[in-house]
Amino acid sequence: DLDEVADAPLIADIEMLSGMLAEVIKKENPTVYDYYTRFRQLGMDRAANPNDVDQPWFEEMKQLAHDITPRDALGVMKTFSIALNLVNAAEVHHRMRLVRENDKVDGAHVGPLPMVEDSIRGTME
Image (cartoon, rainbow, N blue to C red; front, side, top):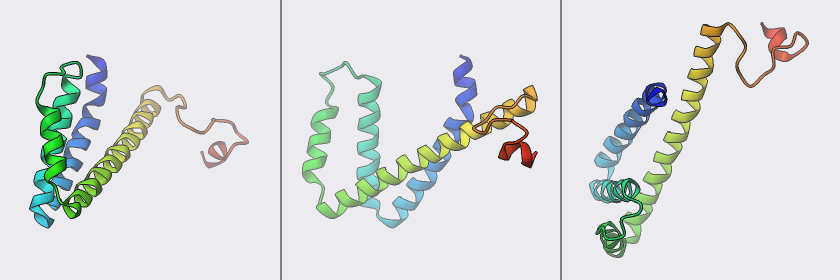
């Protein structure tokens, strides 16, 4: 699929950033790392089978949420927050990469600023 090929660099960036975050969390607090990876895997399992209500993922998530300490819960929430920010940064970087590639291939202007002589972009170029 063409979209999968176009998004391959994005997926690679997300995997790299996620791996780096996981390494840091694992060193800083192995317990938070364990909870984070378990919640993340359960969430991915649920996302892969959204209509399958008989999966045990929900009960396991509830049990994890029940067992976690407030301190570890805060660490897990911070980890997910950082992970989502890293994904957003990777997506912005990917969009800009595509814009630059289109500019090189087409020679036509693609981007957020219009190509007009009296515009900032026109002045700069």
